[in-house]
Length: 141
Image (tube, rainbow, N blue to C red):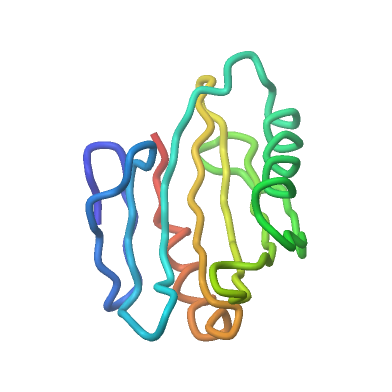
């Protein structure tokens, strides 16, 4: 699925929907219960922040905004030839649901691009391989 700013091949059965303000792309998993797994793509200017400072700030924001935020894994990658990374974390979602977030991030020409998958922690094993496959097709910018 793509729009003029995002290229991403979705897992089978997922659908792209009109994203809210500030989100470039939003796709939802098939409905199954109270929380709908999703993939979002965002892009925002980082100003003069370097890659490391951008990500340190992101971690601080997650800790403040996401109740129970618990980092699990953080790794360095290269995306679109640029320094990038991937994080895996858990946090407390609406109604006490346990959520898992997997996020890929890269800064290109002063713009921070993120692809974030959010799923119920109990569904993560079901979706992990498909989400990773979708992330491998992501073309930021």
